[in-house]
Length: 136
Length: 113
Image (tube, rainbow over all chains, first blue to last red; front, side):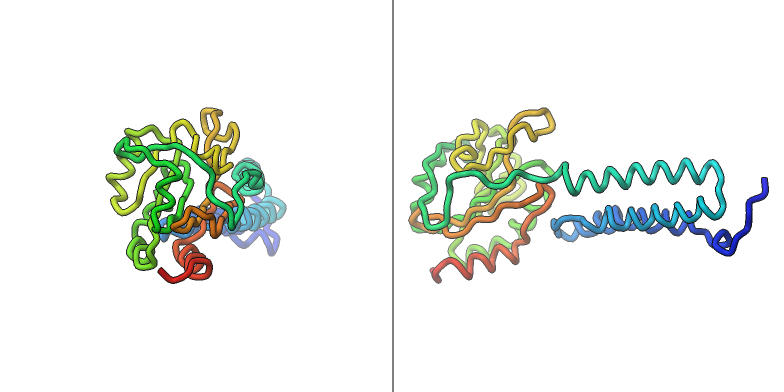
């Protein structure tokens, strides 16, 4: 099956778009490996640029496989935007803790089972208390 | 556990400033002990009943993978008298402040020990 050869169609635009698309997740993996846990805006942005070039490819050259690929990567790109803009968002802080005020009373335990309470925060040593979640 | 690994690697810088780093999650004690084994210079807290998380107001309702409540990632800097000097709320659960930025916060808000 021959394809229409426009000036645009001579370039491997779909492959170019695909490479830009996967650059986002690859960069994010490298970023995390380096310990940088900032918001990965580059993933959906590069994904969108990649999908744009895939769209150009489909417009220039058509082809069922390209159209299927475009739909797949467009949906994946939509998921990336959803992940960054909606899924990962945490609610605004609504607790009662305020700077300049004592930390509230609590009871928890250390890893070895010994109790850890607010009294442990008043031992003349400053504490950075980090709430974490997940094991990644 | 990238965040805890970063904090562990910077533990000497925190210790120099007279600050200990305590990390809390709703993990059961056995899992907290595994975490403690991996990060020996951090103080690992098991807050399985989420009493500490409720006191701090960091509960993220229904956000765990199983639909239960979990913690919103958050950091409090508390001085030796138990007073909160600085706090950081992450707007996304995949986003964290770097240890370098945390050290800057310590230097700017805590008097020299």
